[in-house]
Image 1 (cartoon, one colour):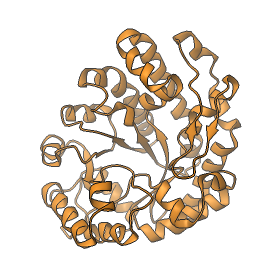
Image 2 (tube, rainbow, N blue to C red):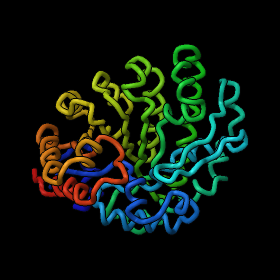
Image 3 (cartoon, rainbow, N blue to C red):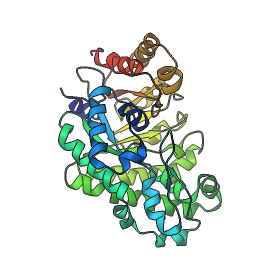
Length: 346
């Protein structure tokens, strides 16, 4: 089976010939390894695609995430008219320079079609098409985005947005619904032309370290469900990752309708399996810094085997780091991470 077939079968809860395995995102690591920068690739769709293709063969994950690290452009594209922009960093993903929505009535001033006026977004989308055409039969190719709750917080400002969940809940609900519709608008051309059949959503501001289960159910789950229902209507899958300890709301991930949830290292993976096995595919949760960055290759292998042994025996499980990987992880550790899954036969 090709990597694409293996991960798709895992989404369905089935056992495959070996443990499915993928990083999540990986833009910072891949760009550094390729010898380029976010700013350089932002201007050149062909070079961005070449980076993704070459790094896919080097990393060997079942999923290839085009656009990893470029998620803030989905807010900046609509914020240009309001003075927001992007600042490139020497290391790390580009930053949004300003927040620009403060009240519900301002949402109507935002133009979703401004997405496709942004040259970087268009380059990421073109790179996605090129990568899919080149290696889409072998790997599951997707394009990344923030989740609706996180993207909404980017528009508003994280600290204010957290306060508004208590002080202006109607505004928060309207904002996350707008962001779900915006992201559907973003993905629709790529789904329509067959370039991808999987959404990749990172929703870190919906972390268990930032919002409680009631806030999650009210503000984060419904827009995720809207996106996943739309994806299903197009015969597409949805990968979701949320940072932090979300062990107190595991059932809510079933409610999102997503194909798979990738867990942070703070989550008890045994408990996650107990709750989700047979109901939803799940992945996790080797610590990207404590283990993949700071441990020896032998220790990485041991940590991977421990996670697989706990959660991976019955199908539907995917070996994944607990979050996106730092750009300084040694290649040998990344190789061992994947090899451990490749060599683990059911």
